[in-house]
Image (cartoon, rainbow, N blue to C red; front, top):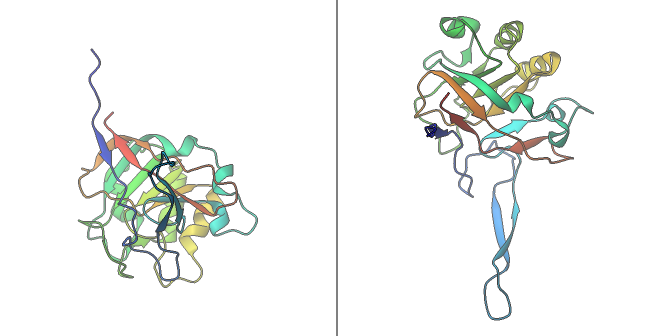
Length: 210
């Protein structure tokens, strides 16, 4: 009998209380139908920023005319992955913070920067130095993820790390929850929705035991 492989849900809850960048649209929901005589179902409509919770930025988010979420190849979002511990690295994760886990690096890398995922908005989070994206790309990494709100600092207007992702045609996941995940190798499953006009997509990101 095949043993069931352990799963780790690395997605935060999505609700009206989810922390968001200032200006992003919060989650809201209304009921358009409820179970009652003559109505057999509950039916709702939701409004939200596609950057809420665990999400995959599409290149369109930081490049005019670039690919939307629905146009993305799914392959980078599924497969072998390494979780690297960079807790305490400071406001910018640099190559030196990742070198200890460099050997045999797979095509997907998730970086843990905090001990517990935030439940309220704060601009005080860790992001990537742009040279770290170059360093990962040189090692054939196709997707990078982080457990903070962005790969660039909250006050950045030029988004250098996002633009290094664009230059290398890499994919990104943000707002992951890695609190209960040890550093090491896993299988990542974090598929974006086929949103043909969107600049990002929520994902239900999970790690599976290899």
